[in-house]
Length: 361
Ligand code: ATP
Image 1 (cartoon, protein in one colour):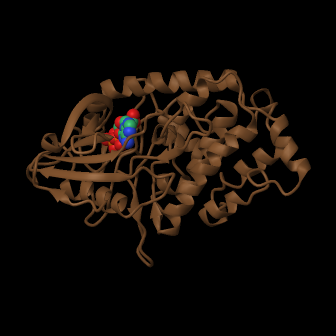
Image 2 (cartoon, rainbow, N blue to C red):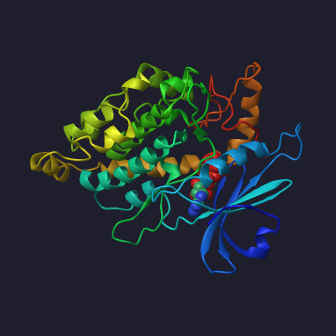
Image 3 (tube, rainbow, N blue to C red):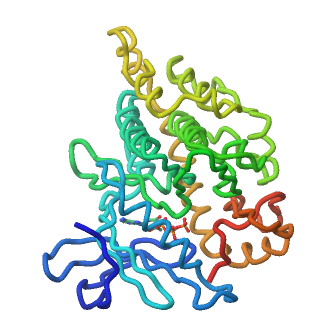
């Protein structure tokens, strides 16, 4: 369905139901289209009323998210169904993800073979390959943005969500930005160097590492330490966490957590790596003998959920404080914020700016 700006109100056409989640700039609610009875997710985003206002997102930013989403059509990418706009708010009516986050789904399992984890990873890679093929980079790949359409089905379908930081990459135009979450961002983001689709591939390396071990490869005691670990490329496969991991899986991660963006595997290369597409029976068998460190993964996930709820409460205060740490912007430069990984109020992020280019509402 073609997505057009609607003059009518969202409530005229959709019945608004319970809240599904919330982001920095509004809530996401389940809704039912009155004419068809179909369920969707309505994402309400507060936009700035006037140029000087510090509340909400710049309208042009939401329009950019919409412009990217409306052109995307892939089984592993969440789809935009409808759009409403008024002076202080935009409402994106999105395909409903009933299955929750992938990491929560996995954490409920007794055990998971590498082979089963690969089925999910392959879907993430297919979605990312599609995006990169259209010169779009997501720039915010992390567990919270990987959801399942349904979970009580034999083969749950992955959907990548939240295109709030996504960018269309133009040939010959350099894009630099300080955005993302310290645990998942690539060295070039921290160094404020040009970003590309390879920036997403680093995040996929981090997600895979966590998925297999329940350990975050660069996580430090503070955000500053995490960022410094990323810059040094300081990670290892600690035997006690990776004892059940195949060598092919480690090789896959090694080819993504490479400092030089051009040397990282692309999504298409990942899809033909022998860990994902075994060349022979021996390679395939290794994936069935290796498994995910479920005990540690569950611990990681519980801690992640705790941090997310903590962050929701303290985000506004912290982000407003962080604004004060920002160096003045030079004209034409885009400075955006990294979301803190730290729960400690005292651990101040060093080079981090705002999560998005706006303050919280
Ligand atoms: P952030 O502050 O991380 O940028 P955001 O404002 O861009 O967030 P989203 O990440 O898109 O908002 O959504 C916030 C939460 O709402 C998600 O983490 C998820 O729990 C829920 N959510 C978003 N989209 C959907 C969807 N299509 N179906 C079901 N739940 C959704």
